[in-house]
Image (tube, rainbow, N blue to C red; front, side):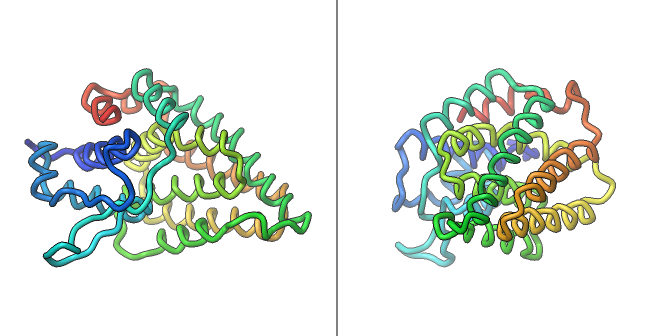
Length: 256
């Protein structure tokens, strides 16, 4: 089968689908690259790309070499329940990118403001921002592809929601992840310089986390709003851009 830009996502969604369904659990070992490639009809390079993304997302751990301890092992599972239902809705119907952006603005400004207020009130030990810090460090690793960076980017935003402890918001944001990743990936292809934009996004991520950590709710809200709306404006995507309409191939991958 000819490789295309969506092949690695087919592997990613297949593994995550098995996790959500219970066919795979933490501690299980994934089949070898060659087997996954043959089963899914993709190249081994796409399998490796998907495994790298799964690893930086914290779902698998990979070990090189041969023998019983080599390969990829499941170490955690994605959010299920409401998350899975929402993701199926997104795949089946395709929400307008403008609606996704507005929803992100509503949810994420509330998340960071609540986190900052918690810090300001002196209850910061009740929230865990370490995962968000770790994801920022991972995003600064040299040699990341745009797909890997953007996957970590979305995981960073989800980590902030998880730190808030609001499971409805966590499930909603996790459920919308596919749709968010789709428009940010399409948007990345419209940029004059991915290097410049990714560097700016990193600065904004640090500013968001810094505002939360010092308990500055207004700054946290403003920074998140400018971060999300700024990327959407920079990519110049129309809500009805044909690139944003899921085709049959992508929808099939999302439903794997």
